[in-house]
Each structure stands twice: as C-alpha cells, then as structure tokens.
Image (cartoon, chains in turn cyan, red):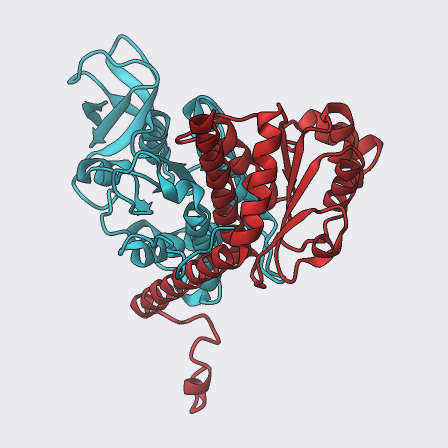
Length: 246
Length: 219
C-alpha cells in the first residue's frame, strides 16, 4: 500500500468566478421571476445539461421552489431550440470555448430575445468571443490544458451547483427581482444606438424580410445588404437590416 | 410600512433596492462554497486513498480479463454516473475501457419501471447484460436508494465486483455486505457530496489507468 505524504492538492476556481456567477444568478432569478424557462445545452457532455435541469426542477433542498429548466439533448441545438425559446427565456450552454454548436446557439438565442449564460472548462474564450458570445461567461479557469481537469474533478458540477444556490438566495430578496429588466445588464442593446440582432424567417424579391428579434417578428427592409436567406442573422436599425452577422 | 419599526424589517414589503450589496453577498457566498467544496474534496481524497487503491486494483484485474463496467444512480447522481462512464469510454488520456451508464436508455428504464417497478430498473439490466467478470459502480448521496441496493445485491449474486459511492454517513450502502468497496463522503450537503464523488470517481479512474500503464510496461 502506497503511503501518501501530506495532503492531496485540489485545484481552485478562476479568481473572477464568484463575481461572474453572482451576476449571472441575479439575472437568472429575475428572468425566472418574470416567467422564464431555463434551457440547458451541453453539446459535448449532455449529462451536465441534464444535471442542471434536475437541480432546478427537483431541488435537493427542502422548501426551495421548483423552477422550469429543461435540458435539450440535440446534435443541432439551434434547430432543437428555435421553436421552444421565447423572448425573456434563458439559455445556458456548458461547453469548451471551441464548441461550434454552442457558439451558433448563443448568437441565435440572443436574436430570439433570450438571456445567455456560457459556462465552461478548459481554455478561456477570447475577449472577442466573450463579448459577442453571451451575456454571462463563467469559466473554471484552468488555462489551456487539453485534458480540462475541471470537467472531471468535480469543479464543473460545483459551478452549476453554485449558480443554483445563488439563484435561490436571490429569491429571498423579492424587491431586487423586479428591477428594470431591460436595463439591468452592463450593456443594454435595447436602449443603445447599436443594431439589434435578428434571425431571418423569410424574405421576398422586393427586399423585405420577416425577422425574428427579441421584440417578436418584424418586417425589415433588406435592400442595403446582399442576399439574405432564412436562418441568416442580421443587425437591424430603424426598420432596416444594416449588416449580416456571421 | 413606514413606522419607527421599519429598521427591524427592512425588506418585509419587497422594497429592497440595493443590488450592489446583494451582489457582494452573493460573490462572498460563492467563494465560501468553492472553499468548502475544495476542502471536502481534499479531505475525501485523503481519507479514501486506501479504498481507492484496493478498488482500482480489483477493477484493473477485471478489465484485463475482459470485464466491463456498469454505472448507475438516480437524479443528479445518474448524470454523475454518465460522466464517470464517459471518462472510461472516452478518456482524456490512457486506454479507453468498456463502461455503460444504466440510465442512458429511457425506453429500457421506463419499460422496467412501468412493468416491474422502479426498485428493479438497474438490477434487471444486470440480469440481461452482466457476466461474473464485470464491475458495478453505484452513486448515491444518501446511500439508501432502494434500486441501488437491489442492484448491488444482484451484482454480488452474479459475481460482479461492487463499488459504491455514498454521502452522509454512508447509509445502508456502507453497511451492505453487497458493496465490497464503499467510498463515503462524510458531509451533509447533497451538492458538496456530488462534487466530491466526481473527484473520487476521477481519482479511481486515474488509479486504474496507472495500473494498466504499469501492466503494459511489465508485460
């Protein structure tokens, strides 16, 4: 029998974990208070999406309310979630930074008017991906290790457990759940001069298209951008599609 | 409410407005949970080292003889079981090994649950699939899940190696003669127990891989 000298070492979390999960939990609790469903996706490890959903639906702590969370196990989460997500819902994706299915889903979820949370392990997303990828980014912070120890050593489970725990702490502060929901984020697309993201539903030869946005379905002028097709993402400003987003 | 007693019940009518102080509290709470989880994982890895070495040795012998691993659990533990199975099947390093999560097939699970009862959903699958060379690993936080205890009894009767992961004081799993190696996470938070069981499962997998690598060198 091998005797172990001293205590085992265990890895910690990224320094900004507490702050990032706190902000995400407040946002999630506000959306739940407003009737949201939490959609959970983990294209690389679907069991983690299922674990998150069961935490919210069937809380392990007696007396905590059951909340609507659903895991979606799909090879194509964009197609799987497109008919399900409503404006005001929350999409939680758990993945590596390199997961293409997650990147596609997070961008579209914003066009559909959902708040997005991106939780992951391994190499941290680039600053560009962080900013464009999700409203909230929560990372384990191991750095570029290919074997992603946080995936296996309990820390990924810890990350979503803490998100659940803090979300329920927020429910103990009802006065803080009814803040101006459109403007409680660091950046507020709705109120700024930026274009709003939309997903093309259909288009006609006259340069008009029906586009799905956070506000619903809008009829938009597409004449100033090149051909658009159903499923394309566009930026809309003043009733006009001003750019295509890839 | 606006009388002299307001200060006693500052949030009683939901008029709390200081988001900043809540976020500070939430952040501190998160850090406290991270620290508690790390301390529990460290303690459990220390305390379980000998059991893990014994269990890994027995598992390695069976894998080398062609044995397969069956894992099972309920709720969040079923997803932790899925993670453990995929660690063996699609490892980040080392040898891929045959492992299956008995919760994966909802047709099988609901057929058994509907026809013979939820207590038998795992044991019936062992009857269909297992041989005496195989390994059964069950995860429970309470240690008292009926369908796990039933499965361990079936496994033992069929000659399988049995390994249990439990929380609290181990529940019935810790006392069961049908659980040969029982790893108990001595804690009373389901969340912290599950995080720690993931760490113990990872440690068990690493110990098996190291033994397989040593076997390869000496062969």
